[in-house]
Length: 476
Image (cartoon, rainbow, N blue to C red; front, side, top):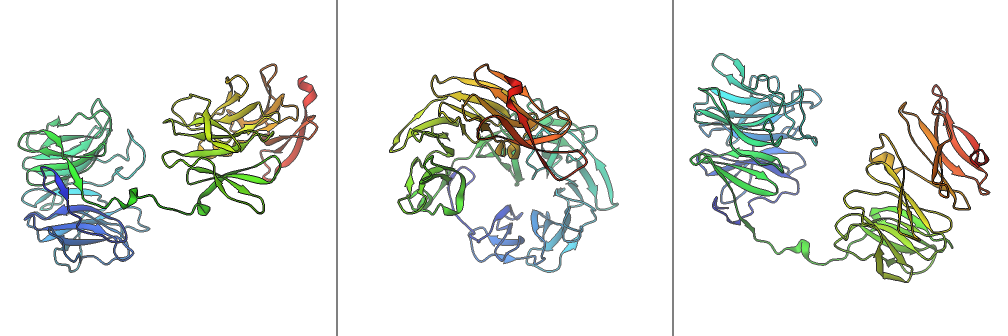
């Protein structure tokens, strides 16, 4: 597409992923990593399209990094000789193919040649593919200037705990990304090779810049879902408007199967039907013969964790149709008119546990807070909070109600990393820890008469759980 913006022309269409495109110095060829035959290898393709030329054929993935300044070879990173593919090293391969030549680096991820090709700005390690941000520590990328003439190396990121990624050598400057600024976001910086001074060039405060690439006149990068061009001449950046020509087939309504995406389920009180969550919708299915009904029918929202009230009059689930996950209630047979009953705002909530009298619902949210919603008056009561439940702990959190709907029991983690059993009194609004935490106690359930709470426990030195019980009358 033109640098000024406009329509984009599709050049490649492999079954796998293609990434890291790099223009050749003469602007006639594009090198990229593509998966046409089951592995990511280095390819080239003419700028106007054509048959891709495969340059590497090793069983390990090869990631294109750059061209040599003379345009005769292509630099790529590969773990083919690193042992168990735990890190990458640099290689070059001819622009028309041939054997790969290894560069003298024990480790290498991203790099850029000096204009005369005698030096390289290189990062030996990288956090670019990690899913964390604002990391400060010894595994952050630092930029080294390597001299191929005498094999010497100079670290230009000394005494800096922030990351320095994606070096791009242009003239007397090395441009790179770093989150060392006050914004703590990946912004564009430059380093004067002669003056040895740093300068911040962009000041994005919301989202990081990702995967920049330098040309003769500009740097192209992505930020906040947009492409930007940074001009070397003006030292300013601007968004590039893009028009993608397509038939927009993905927006066309279509039928899809949901049987392979079933997640959470609940059974009706009479046992004749079941609620199931699949592909962001809630379905009602017969136990034996009958029809399958899509209860939520929302293509623009996700519905999760459906639960049928014990009296059979209400179906509850979480839905983000309002913008955030809130509790919605619907009547069987009148599912087209559900009612949003909470306004909790941002966050994620998990499985719903109805009281036997169908008046209260207990759940846990992504902040590990255990809450109870009262159907009769719309109030929410904060019950407790777990300490270190991640998604798996919240997903596995369970509640057991007493038959009279006055009590419910659950377990959560303690400071000593053991789990303890709790019993909450909904009448007196009192929460009691009924196991001392010396043993690991979990999975509490009320018996059918509501007199005892049964739970599993194991001694710290034993792996096999043992079933114990706790009398409820000590709380009364």
